[in-house]
Amino acid sequence: MTRHRRRRLKLKSLYVWHRWLGVAAALWVLVLSATGIALNHTEELALDSRPVHWAWLQDAYGIRIPEAVPAFRVGNRWLSQWGDQLYLDTRPVARLAEPLAGAAAVDGIIVAASARKVLLLTPAGELVEALGPAQGVPRGIRALGLDGEGHVVVEAGDGLHRTDAQFTTWHGTDKPPLRWAGSEPLPPHLARAVAPRYRAALLSAERVLLDLHSGRLLGRAGVLMSDAVAVILILLAASGTFLWYRQIRRRRSGGRRWE
Image 1 (cartoon, rainbow, N blue to C red):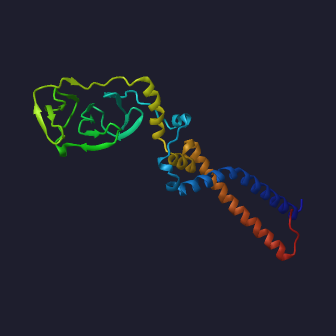
Image 2 (image 1 turned 90 degrees about the vertical axis):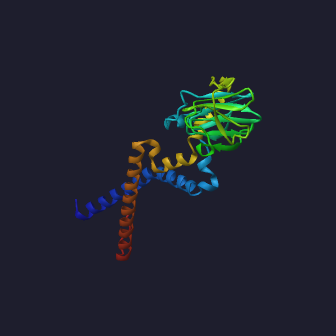
Image 3 (image 1 turned 180 degrees about the vertical axis):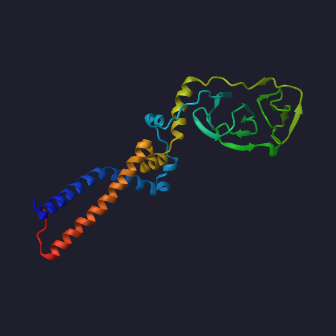
């Protein structure tokens, strides 16, 4: 085999590899391009607040339903805590990082308490005020109830405390409430309605697109795939530049272009 023929075979092999590398990278490049365009318009598309409702994808991210869901009857409605999210029946109403210690409806207001916070909500679930130690709320609240006058009484680390109707002052008391607000199982129809909403709220379209764009959605294999595609693109750029340079040289020297 002559030297010239060997060079032509090598060049032909480079063309073949260039084409196949392009085909191999094309699908991933389309994914990167599509996700990149979408991420550039996150605010316009509201991707950060758009929940993902696909259960299989939620499972892939390890998003599970809490084993214990504190739930309290407030009038003819239910206030429950899923993770750090409070739901009034099926509507998300407020966030509470600490476990819900108790909740009750009094004088047209829903009162919810955790160890260091008391939340005041309207019957529609709108947050009126969040009270803490700075507003006199006792620390270490473990339970909440109502006394005979309809005032809120809480059991805290240092005993019982009673507040006034405006929740402006808290006083120690030795009289327990007529009834403590106890956690009850959430009615099944509400649990079935809230569970998928809770899971979807933990996974936004922006997060999925970011993980797809970087390859992290597929775990370690996806990251390695992204790295491999990056290497392929480098090889495509190098081989394409080389082939283009060869064609320019052939045309300038009057040689016949190889097909």
